[in-house]
Length: 493
Image (cartoon, rainbow, N blue to C red; front, side, top):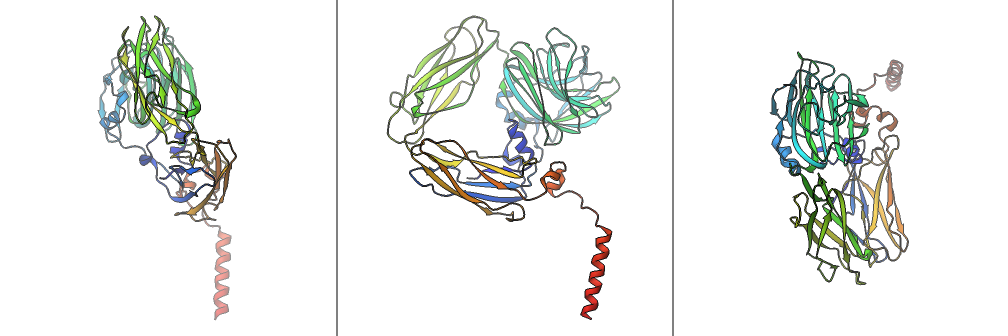
């Protein structure tokens, strides 16, 4: 298996900012270096990731998705997508080649009297959506396009949005539940194409955007609009005579789309626990209006881990009192045995409420029990590791020891060239990573990147990708070379 490290790659920056991307859609490497681990000493064994690929000079391409494609890729956000024009704007929304287009004619999103065109779906609780927003037409410098959350679809409803004004700012705007005017949260100069993200965690809303693929601007705001709302995409033209069109290509999204008053869900899809951890703590969340007592049963089902042998307790109940929302935790006991073994797993599922009413969101999780009785496994930490290297010309690769830490172990590593030449694009390295008895902290391999001058490349990404225009030759140097050539020719005669 391979792990990829992308130097100065937009995909790296997205990953660092928590924005998940599909590797196949974005990786376009120019030079490669392989990094290998050898069989460790002691009783430890190699894990699944024993070879890494370092990609130098990678670049990205925008996703090419139809509207149906990205809806299919967001099963938890499919919902009831519908156009919600406010202020009388009924311009078209049409699927296009790269995502889909939204057109607006009329007023502005800014202010109490809003006029904009939106594609929204109802959502309850926390959500996150990331999208590439590209301008097709903007007749006014303050035209806006971006991501939006609204407490309601009516004009004047509380909202939070991250929008790009083509010739002005890209920033976060907020209107509170009292219907006060929208206030800005600061931003950066807009651009023809902007990658942006909007997310909610409780009453906190966060936004992030980049206009160049390197420098991210983040903003946050607090608002209490209630659990129910609408999330989606918005375009406004700022002028009754202006026409605005933007293309939206969704990268990722998650959330619970529903119009129910209450939703219960697991906060995560997977949990892991070491065998000596004694218990695994699972978290269920209730979102919505919180009306009434709510009792939701849960049940654990054996997989490779068996109830009564590997874990104890296979049924239970999670209870929220009237008016309560938020998280509730419950524990399942883990059986510790002294015999080294492979990882085992079981599933836990939420059932229909036995008291009260609620829709079920993410209702099943998998729990993996990791054996930690032996010396453990040594492997690269991630399938994808990113090294931005902005001003620090070193690629960092983490190696971990897991599922056991008994005894001292060592593992050797070395680099070998792919399409990148050592001494030109990178510096060959080799060495040994060591863990003492009881030590399971990650260790780091550092690979110096020699090309290009990173201080220059940080300000001129074209240099990194080999697309920068070549500097004009110095006339004095050209004359000197010609004189030397003539002299050499005369000496030969």
